Every structure is written in structure tokens, then in C-alpha cells.
Image 1 (tube, rainbow, N blue to C red):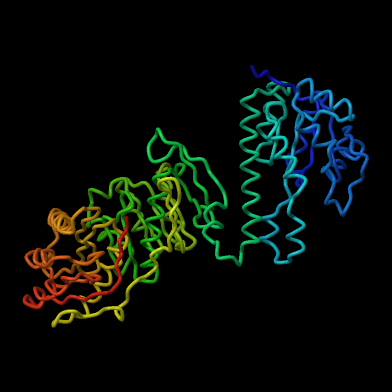
Image 2: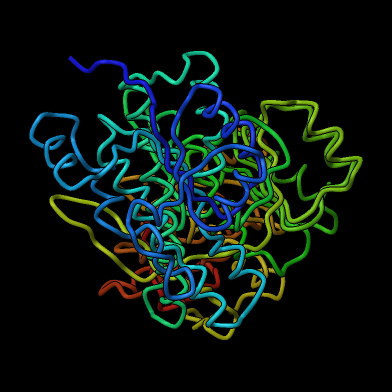
Length: 509
């Protein structure tokens, strides 16, 4: 059974001395023998506290401009030795002191990277000794306490104050967990620097940092996020972000990236699928039109806009319950209002970034593909019917096609006046997707006469265009490519419905 352990000796080697003094004084008050190096040693001595130089243990000075100070068997022996008879005997044989606590603050590699492009300066801020101390102490957590960054200073201070420096196995293991998190994040930051010109950008962007989530998709599943969330967003308020929030936020950003250069556009998503999208002359009008697309599903949804949220829009949004609201900017008045709902997540997006690759785990491996970055423009249209679409219909067809690309297959989108008026998604039959879209449109009071239809893949039979015509749909966009394309074309010609083909399928599984 693991016994509590009293800290009797400590090695302190930190870059920043901020917040260190209270810990050093607590250790000194409790009679802990202190070892240190360089600037940290001088800092402790200036506090009037006795500290032994690591050089006295190793019998080697700090060499190579400080690159080698602690990297020595007499240091790492004291850290890695298990407190059992055979290891302790070897420590005694080689005159190696036990080290019970390591306090480290690594060289600020990322801060240096952000402040200079000078390669030699950046390289010198890659910590070798500190990272090795952290890993060694964490590996031997059964006997050694590790404080891997300033973020853990309060935790060790509480242990010293409340328990007189006695640590439990659970505390040491938790600190070891944090240590390996610090270590892994630090290594990834360095890898990213060296990987800057590599094509391996997805790895760089996807595991920059890691963050434990409360749980995964459901409460009985564990979850973690590997990435740099704060590089994309400024968190303005709200509760901690969950696994499902992250999945929905990703879907929202990918969708709105299609509209980022358009007139004011608003989208409402639920379970990664858009249930409302609209483009209007103002953000407020776009919000009202998007909400009208499915005011029921909007409850607890993810909201995203491509332009600044003003007070008038915020006032309307504040009337419903939502999980997350994302926009590139908020007026001060809008922020003040929206932040009053303390649990609702408010995010200022810095860039509508879309990854170039995607990964998915399956079976006993991983599949990887390029992201679907193709967005059709009018020049991509091949008019398949005798009747060509009008300018207004082309505008709606482009809008509907963007929406269809981001809904789960099989999907059908119905749009009118740059507004999503009906959608069917995730269906096993394209006919079922169309019927679902028509039913939803009618349920929310939309008149389908004059609307357009978009499909994420070809029509294998003319049944969809037949149903569409009966509902009043007056233009169609689809990829084409079926051996029976002509059947759908013939029907559209018979009813004077313009159909355009893009040649690009947008399956989304």
C-alpha cells in the first residue's frame, strides 16, 4: 500500500521567478534541503535562504553557456531511484542524494517564437535539462513530487501549508499527469516550429495542446480535445466547452466559411446540421430569417454569423435558449447583454479557418482524406435542360448548393430568396430526404412555389424531380453522373424546370 511521503529535499530550476518566493519560504520553514542552479540559486540566496548549488553534487560546473547544468547521473539518480533497498544502496555507493521534489518552469519557447524570427534565439529557448527533470520526476511519481509549471505553484503551496509537505499517492500521480501534459505540449510546440514548411500541417494544428473534457459524446464516455482552440477563438463568456459543443462548433465554422465573404449571413445548427440559414441586408434580418427556418430545432442550438452582432440582433437572440453564439465581432452593448446569461458560450472567431485534411478512427486504424474544399460558382454550372435558370434562381441555387454540402447525406435542400426553407438530411433514401424537406418547409409555413432544390449527389431516377415539381419547386441543382440522368432531364424539360449540373458530388458521412 502506497504511504504518504514527506518532502525532505527539493531541486528548483525555473526560468521565471514569478510566484516562486512563497514556495521557497515554505520549504525553508519546513527544513527542506534545497538544491538549485544559476539564476534560480541566486534568487533563493537573495531571499536569505540557504541553497546548495547543483555543481556541488555533480562536481561539474555549468558548461556550454548553461546548456548543461542538471544533466548528470548524480541528479537523475536522485530523481529516478525507487525508495527501496537495492536502489537506495546504489545511491549511497555513489554518494547521490535523494531528491523528493522538483520545481521547474521551462524556457518560454512559444513566447520567444511569438516575439522574434531569429532562429538562434528561438533554438536557445528549447529546454533540454528542465524537460528531462520533469519527465524523470513524473516517471518516479511513486516517490517524487513534480511541479512542472507555474500553474501548479498553488497546488504545491497548499500541500506545504495544509499537510506540512506530506504528499499522497493521488497528489503525486495528479502532478505527474500534469507534468506529462506540459511535456507533450512543449514538445508539440517545438515540433510545429520545425514542421512549419512541411505538408504535415494537420498534425501541427490538431495536437498543439490537449484539454480534458468533462466527458465525451455521452456522460459515460471520457473525452479530450487535442488542438489550439484559443488560436481560433477568443472566449468572451459561458460555461466550459463540451465534446458535443466542439463537434457542433467545428461544423458551424466549416459551414460559415462558405459565406464569410457574402452579405450578412446567419446560421443555426443542431447536431452538426444546419436547420436555419439565411443571407440578408442586415445581420438582424439574417438572424430572423435563419430562425424562421426551424424555430423548434433552434432551441439549444449553435448560432453563427459572418458579421458583427449589434445590440438589436443580440436583443432578439437573447430571447431564445442557445448553447453557443459565434461571430467575428460583437459591439460592446451586445457583449454586455449576452454575457448576462453566464452559461451560454460566447465566442469571437478570429478566422474562419478550415483544415485541409480530416481524420477518422475506424476498425483498428485511421482513415485520412483531403477536406471537401470545393465550392461551386456559376462558371461551374452545366445547364442540362432547355430552360436556363434566371439570375435570381442562380443566386438561390448557389446558396442551396453551399447548404447541401454541409448537411449529412443523403440530403436535399430547399431554398428561396437566399433562405433555407426546408431540408432533409441523413436519410437512407434521397426521396425520403426530399419528403422530409417538403414536410419541414410546410410545417414552418413556407410557400414552396418558386423555390429551388439542391441535392448532394445525383438522382438515380426521376422520382425526386417529379415530387419537387408537384411541390412547386422551379429550379434544380445536382452533381449529375447517373447513367439515368436523362430521365430527370427529360422530366424537367417537359415541365420547363431549369436544371444545372455541377459535376461535383458532396457526400458527407
